[in-house]
Image (cartoon, rainbow, N blue to C red; front, top):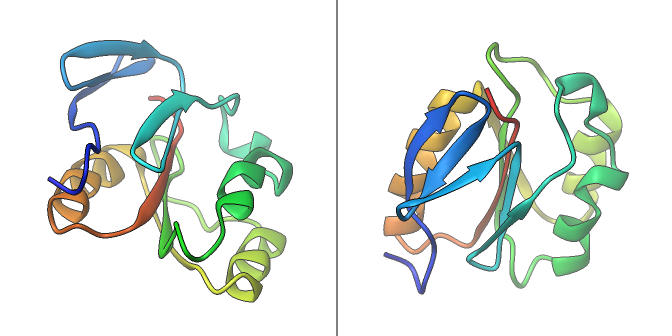
Length: 119
């Protein structure tokens, strides 16, 4: 496990179980810390909702792993361009796939932020 990153044990029913503890709603994992993320739907995804990721900067975040909900959808152009300008990569997919990939990537020691819309 990379540093003290939490593991995603389960997802669904509107939340996530991280290292044994249930978190209701969407989730932002940044600097190995999970926090509530006030994005309930893909339509609510904005630059402002990702402000903590941009504030962390490239030194902390190699790329953003974005779980966009039940169905995969491309994030808005403004978000894609802002991440590129900040020198951060972007991987987006449906939330179930992102939750599974998160565990693999953190076990490899990758410096990532995970923004996961609850399903």
